[in-house]
Length: 274
DNA sequence: CTCCTGACCTGAGTGC
DNA sequence: TGCACTCAGGTCAGGA
Image 1 (cartoon, rainbow, N blue to C red):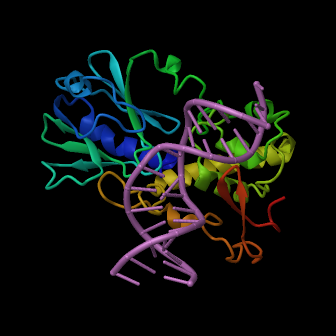
Image 2 (image 1 turned 90 degrees about the horizontal axis):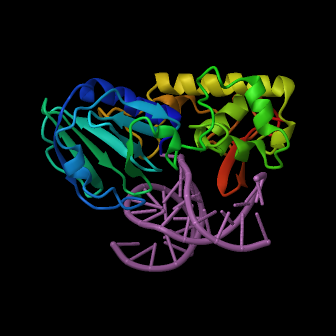
């Protein structure tokens, strides 16, 4: 499910609920997700006070009073729901729930279990194996034309594959890469190393614009994504190419083409995108 | 190193 | 209804 805008939507919803709150209790319904969960996770979390949750790429990081940080990744199908009181029922894919002292709850559910949770020492985020190699935040000033030029130079893969590489840009996934390439009028098949100059400038603006707009709309709801309050994400109405194979391009009316690139579907207008 | 494929999981949709 | 098959917002491990 979740790319940067969906993760940011979750983080934003968590912030006012958890910040400054003590964890009253934790329920773990299984001892692994994608990987085994840290031993004693429930006991470690209980009694700690939550800081302000932040985001790095597609990860949510929740700093805790005990100098540890809870790392959350939602995988493909993960979601967090927030409740103002004890949830009426737990579903078969609810794996982890936290009760706060103010009697609100948040519940992590993930049917496919590609998500994961981990604990790290606060301050050591950059050394964590899952975070160490992450690339630039696309909404930060560090995401510049110079950064992109250096990052793409000499790459022999397609621009589509390069943009999905979290070591280059942190947080993009299949939906927003397709949408940003359409907005920048760049073919997903173009050699990454050949995206320079005006094209690179358009790409940076398009990535920023697509992400900002999607965050404003609460992300994109296709199958699994809901905002933590239960509302869907409305960016689905803005999708120009993703999931629209065969439909008319919004710009030139040519049919949107679907191809397969490194195992993922790419949608693009062969007329507008070069 | 770089790049691509397969694997991990469940559920929804499609076609016979 | 049932079954087989495909596909899905991710990304890691392994091999070419």
